[in-house]
Length: 113
Ligand code: AMP
Ligand code: ZN
Image 1: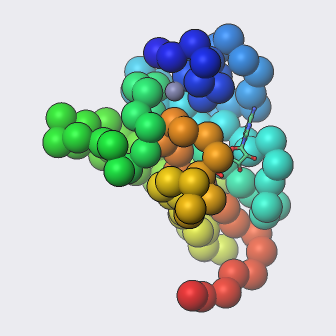
Image 2 (image 1 turned 180 degrees about the vertical axis):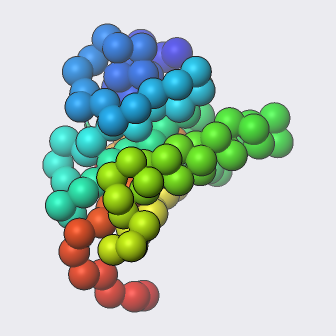
Image 3 (image 1 turned 180 degrees about the horizontal axis):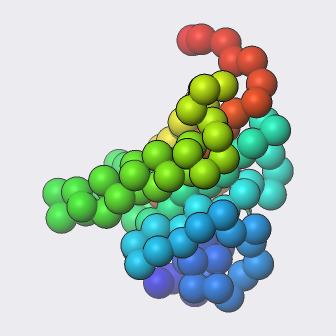
């Protein structure tokens, strides 16, 4: 827990968030500036800065974050419409909060690449 980290504070219940679900290791909450009708962030409670700084010992927690994406998709009925997941790693990729989070977004059209 880093007190300067917004997402650590959300995970600790010390900063407000519209929480979808939480368990021992993972918290999912609605993005405050959604870019899609559904836009949820799934985070580990553990402070991991990004995928670039995650370590082999984080394998279990990283798996749990991905299962948090699965749970989000089923809770919000996103399986059929489909959903996009994005993890920005580093400022150059658009990361603005330096606590690992997976964006889960649905309800609009997407382009690729
Ligand atoms: P990224 O740009 O990938 O680091 O994503 C950070 C995301 O966190 C952005 O989509 C923000 O809108 C979102 N965000 C920032 N502050 C909050 C907050 N207090 N509650 C919920 N989402 C937030
Ligand atoms: Zn943090």
